[in-house]
Image 1: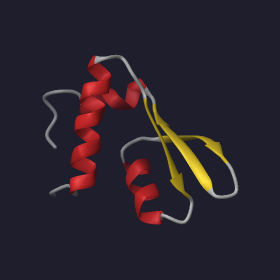
Image 2: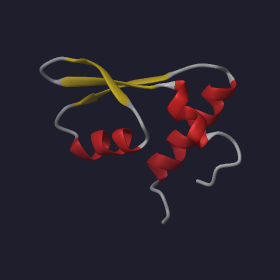
Image 3: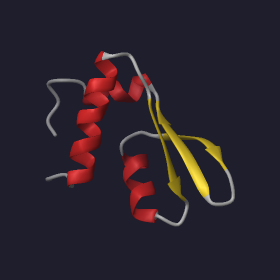
Length: 72
């Protein structure tokens, strides 16, 4: 199954951040269901929430599954 451009970009970002031992953290509107579903499918966890936004972070343990060598 071919991934969307957004997922391919995020997977590449995860690879770079894993090498640099960093986390990926992002904020999205709660109303953007398509984006929220994509981030959840990539292993992001909600670390903060308010009435309009969710803040996501990918733990390094989830980043490892998209490390170099895994197909996009």
